Amino acid sequence: MATALTHGTLDESGFGSYTAADYDELLDHPVEIGDFESVEFIAAGVPHHLVVAGRFESDLERVASDLAQICAAQIEFFGKPAPFDRYYFLCLAVGEGYGGLEHRASTSLIFNRDELPKPGEQGQPRDYQRFLALASHEYFHTWHVKRSKPAAFIPYRLDQRNYTRLLWVFEGITSYYQDLLLLRSGVLSVAALLQRFGELFTRVYRMPGRFKQSLAQSSFDAWDILYRPEPNHPNTSISYYTKGALVALALDLTLRADTAGRTSLDDVMRALWQRYGARGIGVPEDGFEQLAAEISGLNLAPFFDAAIRGTEDLPLAELLAKFGITLELRASAGGDDAGGTPRAANGETLALGAGYRSREGGVELTTILEGGSAQRAGLHPGDVLVALDRLRVNERNLRRRLARFESGERVTATAFRGDELLEVGLVLKAAPIDTCYLVQQETIDAETAKRRDAWLKPVATP
Image (cartoon, rainbow, N blue to C red):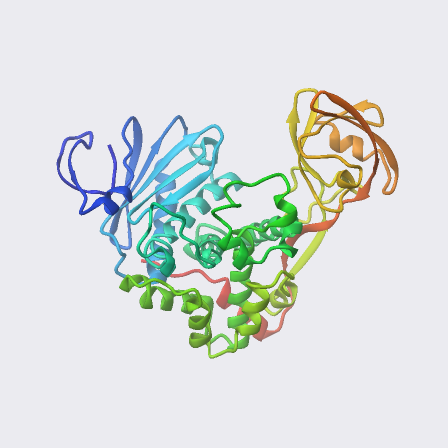
């Protein structure tokens, strides 16, 4: 048995007496009961426990060592002492699944067992980076959600919805720092960080809904939309996690550039913690914006009006250029192309303008993007595409079949809608230029190099 609850005398299996001060504390301390493996490690002088249930094969000592660096960097980021006297990562390794939930002295994580590094494996494979980013994200929430939180969440009202327009602050900024602190802790290289940022850009730029819904609206509508998505949501909404992370990046670079390095988002986050989280005071709806302006001495109203209440893309290419980073865009090379690298495609890539998944006999269209070929042909989410140009398609060969045609060519698409067979004319279009990657400029002036080094620097941890 494993939990961060205060305990009395326990046997070797962890069973015994545990105490919660009140119902809220009881709810906020999950318990792992069953067969699991565990490793204890120390970060910034605080005991931590890595607990992993489920079938897996990995070197948990190696994982614990990486987590120790991440946790120490975050404790140093917000300032000692940590707001807990011990911490538990309660993990479940599964075949398919990904997610986490933060608690005041622990987190519950679920992830694919293959994301853990193989015994003896060196480096930081892409799958393992995903696990570390998840752990980093939920650990950051120990300060920035569990303690610093919207005033609308104090106290939590468990019998009703708690609305706020600040979820981009708490989830989006956390999504930015989850990766940045992997770099600063020393477990991720600059090149790997920029690849992850490129993938983040790609996820946002592939969502037409970013031009329809603002971050403030996305935050407020989370109860009704985010966790109950419908097939058209890419066209009508944006995630406060992903776009919120891009806004956090833009704000950080803006503060660093416009104050000549005197102020960064780091300073705002530490001030937010000291003024609100450490004192148990809720953040007002305008509190973050006012604090950022106060700490920086800048007029940030135009920035926040555009980034939070507007729907246009931010000038991220221009901001990154001030730090010697180039934002590049290209067409997608296929369904498995997440961006982040200058992946080459063989010739012009065509796109259906639809998301899809494997289905017996063909591919099921899961989302139809606005303005894409599938929408113009009258195809709907749920349709099962079985043939192009009267030749069978499936998830394995669809990309190859598309490559046989030219942009603007009209082909016959055969699909089932329920039990009705349809044939529609599909005019294929070139894939949009929405796949991103970031490149470090090799030749930059001294001031640009200074700005970049100050941003992408490790944090010395004991």
